[in-house]
Image (cartoon, rainbow, N blue to C red; front, top):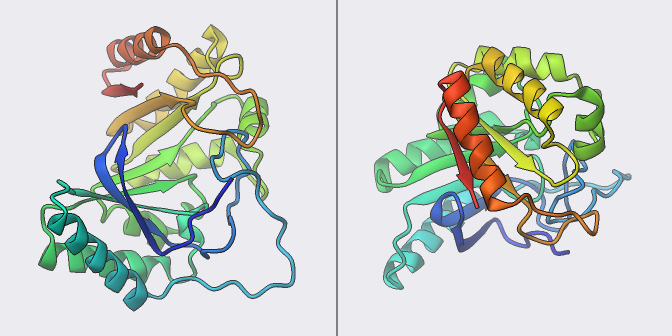
Length: 250
């Protein structure tokens, strides 16, 4: 499995976002994350050793992003979306707050049609500066793959001190948030799983929820996708029960 080897990658035609560029806020030569999810397309996390990690600078990000936007326009690609993510957890960038502020500032001045999303596992949400920072993007997306602590640990395999109740509390403080959930057949889709998950959503009250299932190679071989019908049923039922928009991407 290959990690992203550039600061800006794509465009890719995403299930959720349409034509989308990715901004990799992490080192280009390794995965760096506080989770070690069994379904990660980049494989399992490498242990941190005595190595000097190089994170992209603001000027480097903006320059590469501008270049790729111009190239997409020249090639007739209807690009109107960029996702801040990359080789792991983007909030691990040591200058995350300033990076996001500058990306938003440049977008507002030079590409106002461009929507910005952030994909995060909720790391550092206990920091008010980080919470305020992610509110600057159009789609602040935080994952919640299970609301049963034991199952969450099996699926996401957190590598740092992690508390589900603390994550929910921090998400409640965010104000505007989108919850993302990966459903895996046999892991987190039974009725007991859904009841806990829906109860957590009721506490968080996100702006919306995005659910999806396995569609790429995974770190743990043999993971199976949930059927399209079942994914759509979960979305419809949860929307009706909680009055929160839930969109299934199949």
